[in-house]
Length: 156
Image 1 (spheres, rainbow, N blue to C red):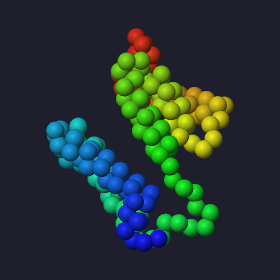
Image 2 (tube, rainbow, N blue to C red):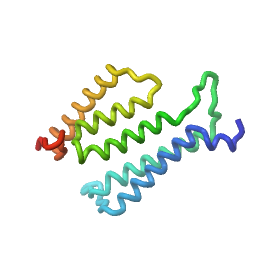
Image 3 (cartoon, rainbow, N blue to C red):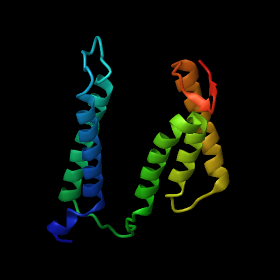
């Protein structure tokens, strides 16, 4: 494979996506006070997460340029999985304020699972139930964040 074709490889493109999300998080965090490590402001976490994502993206891009991409038995990369993952995140963001945390999580897990090679209803259902219960336990009960669980139901 020629070097110029490697720039369209999966590692390079994945790194570009991470770099873009990292830059977006850092750019969005500028609107909030960052604070210090001792007194973190609301912009600290998005800025730190953006830096980590951007650095990870740069490392992936470098890996995509530096090493050969094809190996014996390599599987071709498609667009279905990334599209399902992005659709699941967008769906979650759209549904949380309208239907609540639980329906948004269910939709997110099922949409993301559609991106896999095999879709097994039972496995996706068990994963969805466990992860939704964990999310509600952590975010609603432990952290006491005021999420609407389902339309009209808040546990604060």
